[in-house]
Image (cartoon, helix red, strand yellow):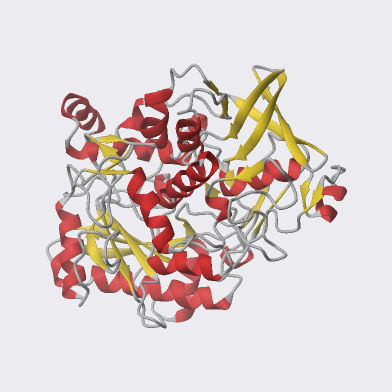
Length: 523
């Protein structure tokens, strides 16, 4: 049995950051455990390859939710990265931090040190922005952030349409203000995806004090006298055990609570039902699940300008020769943050992602012809769900119940998101391209028919958080240093610690969380 100073469970968006920072001191012996494999697949590194990754069984946990009562009892597909880099290796690379108010709210909930002023230095430290450094951005950090090398003319139409609808333009969603229409900056460097595996792990893989174990499925964390002391994991068909001075869970909003529950840390009644010995009764484990629910409003295009029928071989050959062209696109090229009619404080509460192609069912359903899509989601949902164990096997997917639209206020906002997307589609900027509306369709005009569209078509936009929330209340799982309440030597460091969803994509905040805690651990 081996012994380490730090054992990191999960080599995703947070785990790779921690592996880099904690192994920088050669006196620290670090073990990084990843259930997936290496990130060798070329589609990971070619940005436009993401269309292949969402349905790639070998790189994806391929989770599904429990049947959702508000969504026609559908079991929604939840792709999550199962590979070095985690979901940062398969996502759409949009670099978004959220709003200053999101983090100030975390602090107001009792999480000292998590205000926007507190977290901004860690965003800047992580960031290597090709535009250079300023008050909001860093230029020397490991995580490459860049403007797209290629975008479709329809993305320019989308931005122009936003202006015609009375919205501001914004060339930096992570600067002084978030509101407006513009092109996304992306986690890329030199036209290639810059996952956390590329940014943080590749430069340090050869460190003698860092051991990386892939295809290592963690079974549980072992606890003795209210302290985490070791990790059991299965690798190559053999059960293995490693002792750790500090154990860090970085599995994300699904796998981190699952590991805690398998380790006897969680709601005691749930654990006893499955015959798991209770090491610590912590009722909040797996609760407080939040996600951005999204609808795609699609129109056909009268011109063959979209990516729908693109020649994939030609795109690939050009990309690998020059690292530009369509192959360098993240596909979701442009976006917007909008304050809806129901926004109380004029903060954006609706986010749009524009795709110059027809996108249905995560791109798994290929539609004929040409078209373009506006993803629309409500940024601060009120509905709360849960993660529970299905059984005691670590390789069994947990029961994922986001309880979408269980709060009636979310219905109002999803209809508002559809209305806003349609308004943008109808702007003069699209006059030369606008065909018929595919989804929801011309007949969906009143609340009932739009609700029916949402029930049939709404999907995740891949932002689950909150299941090991940070705080001091009875349902909190970790404190402001991300240490698990009641268990020494155990931290959770990933998006699951967010007490509330940030107003945007969740990858950049997850990197920030890991940077901040790594520094605290080493200070």
